Image: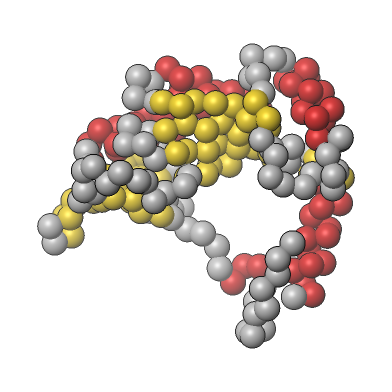
Length: 190
């Protein structure tokens, strides 16, 4: 594993947290509607900043915005610079619920359910091709990367048995708690 040396002293974990992100879009209204219908975001504001029209979206009443959609994305870029936008859910019930919502929306494409061993994810593309991941943590860890197709149609118990069987055969297998302790030690020593 590559470790870069950092000439600056370590800061506490709460020193910086991801708050929100913004993406340029071609069709502002369509994209805002998609994020509201599929991901259950709420529009908190809408306005102009110079020549750029902006819609602010949030799912957290304590956060004015978690996503900013901004007009001005050029057509025919040929390559999407966004690798993925990832959202965490607390359990398998929510993962299956968002899977059903994404599947039911006609503008969703490339929907797939994946096990990473340490997480179960669905991936799909929004109407402008941005890849979205919705994931939940599992009780396990194994060395990454891992990408195995899973069947969300299985019962929760059967699905978790299948995933545990897959992940327990991989290098680095341990419980999530053991992995968290190692990460806490590593990050406090660097």
